[in-house]
Length: 258
Image (cartoon, rainbow, N blue to C red; front, side, top):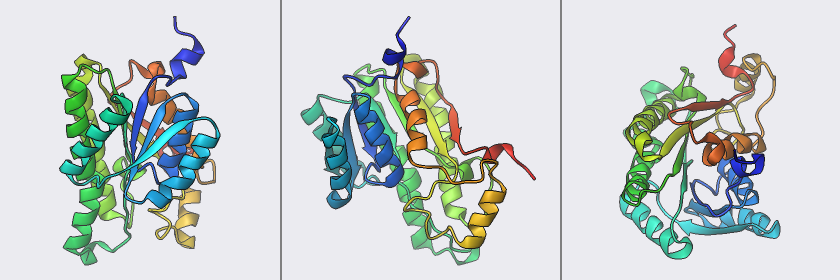
């Protein structure tokens, strides 16, 4: 039997984290690096990555930044090529890029709808295509972790397009888990409850916060570091028999009705 350390170690692994320049996925990147993985932060803003890279490297971790537009297949293919060239390949993919909006349903313009769906859904779809093909063709027992949302499980007011986009991510993840399970490629959905992050700060008005707290048994927001342990489990050997799972980290939000 593997030791407890081997179950959670990412030594010798390379993790590509799309959206790794953000708050939540950036924290996961730090956790992965501390577990021994080489981490590739993927985003469109080098300046956002620099502070995170500095923290990881100061702690003795290995990480670097690559620029890519997650909604463009050509960019993702170039990303994979660069990772293969610099790291020799990868075994872990996190799809964590995301945008949100609180526009009332009847006022949502097509441009906003397209922007949210392109980043939140199409980007995940394309990354799973590009990296999934690489994992399948090279017989790599990989872990793909897609960032879902509580709104992908339960209806959530004010974020119509976001909820729709995340519901599609949840469904895609289960479909791919079924498809690739015989190959040892696992696909899971990490489902944060309410974590203050860049994409939802505009939505968190005082009345919204009060309603969230009234529905969260722990009566607080999650902290970015509290996603790390769940993300670490899903990436490593400790979850070798877990696929198609929606791992909820929500302080009890989804267990409460009234």
